Image (cartoon, rainbow over all chains, first blue to last red; front, side, top):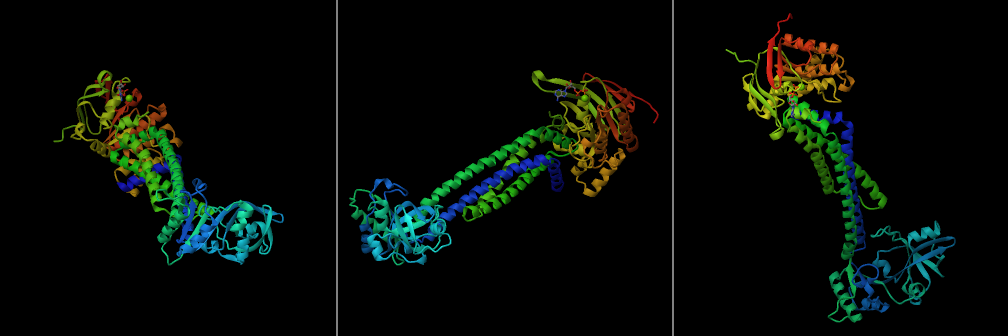
Length: 400
Length: 234
Ligand SMILES: Nc1ncnc2c1ncn2[C@@H]1O[C@H](COP(=O)(O)OP(=O)(O)O)[C@@H](O)[C@H]1O
Ligand SMILES: [Mg+2]
């Protein structure tokens, strides 16, 4: 009986190619959208957490205020003396780099490029896993005197110098010119999706004097030596900074010490929310696909009711008719689901490459979308049939 | 020994609707039909002919009374049992053909055999043979839309007789056809009655068509008005 009913179901599908095609299409679109969105979202999240963990697990970041992000709630910035104090009083701190960022346009001959200038010290390079492709880091005189020297990233080199070697050339930043003494090895995109190689690094004092015009430091990056415990160094840093910033026992910290894990959590939570949002939007398209299928089924309900009447009249059992419709619905939505999955795999693979995020196959969302689409097919394809198959054959035949 | 007729209706009634809107379409029908008979059912429109045919064909159920078919009390059967009666013993031909759309003649005729669980080879052979018997050899792969009304009714007849039913029920089978085609259809039905011994019950308005039958039953207003046998040369 199952075999024959399968035959009948397949014949019914073939007989109504347009209806079958539209049903499949509705499911394909919904399933493909959901899977693609979620897969890309997962990839973006993975990319963020990957890059943060590639920063090393031994990195601590000090920022003023309690929030991560710009502003920091009006808490005072750090001073150069803080850097010295950390370096001498906390033995577990291997590298201590102050960071001041300033946007500026860099010009070389006819080329100009707007980039971000970072003022820091030589600790910045080992702490951030930066390596030099050419040239050298800052010397002591340059750091102390705030000389106009800079080390540029790969992107800046490409935009200003094209094929030329940049070391020894002078580039102009705002109103001063500055000698390129080094070139950084390329790193690619950062966790936030920005280009890490789009950077110009100068001695802290140079940036403070010529660009920011203040002694303030926005951020401190501290790398913890392998022998020291991260939590221990975090505690020591907190105590030291509370003392240096004159925070009484009853007051909360007006700065934050974050480790890589916390930074990762902060950043990935954003992409996770985004993934959920995209997934929700895509789920709506799955639902719309379902409504489309329902429409198709309702439009054909008269014809199908008559068809059921004919089948009953020539001796089909109610359960045979139901099984046929169930198989039809399951076959159509499975085909739609499988095509949707295939399409989504292709699309997410392609888009992941385009967006430069890893492609992660997520079995759960594939299974879930498939089951959901099958459920839609069954609900909208099967339940109208159930009503009709319960009628007297003559009433089904006469259905208007 | 076996004296009971093939079909026996006793005090059969049918009421459509309920309460205020209730309408009694059959008001107590008593009728017996023997194996091999060719019965024409006539009567004015609305007199209960189709209602009776539908009950006889197990497509509908009576409100009261009894319907005995091959010594089975049909009114006591379940839905599924009635479906099995239709499957094994009854063939139905409708005024409006009721073929599956966009489905070839062959597949339409095969359909009852599929439900009987016959394998593909014997199914195809039987369906082709049935189409040949109704004069549609060469039309197996045409869909209803590609066939004339007369041809569609032939497909419907092939579908009804492909299972070798005990009874062929035809409700105004020529109602949608012109005179010439009607006569061809009638000859076909008559042949199945004479040659295969299939009992035929046929509703018709036209005396010309009823003339093919050996017994004519007249319905009026939900009652059986007359029942007469004609003796005609075969
Ligand atoms: N499904 C139904 N619901 C209500 N009334 C019906 C239904 N089917 C038939 N009738 C009524 O029953 C009466 C007999 O109908 P029917 O058996 O079809 O007559 P006919 O002799 O023309 O075939 C008619 O008056 C018809 O209006
Ligand atoms: Mg009628």
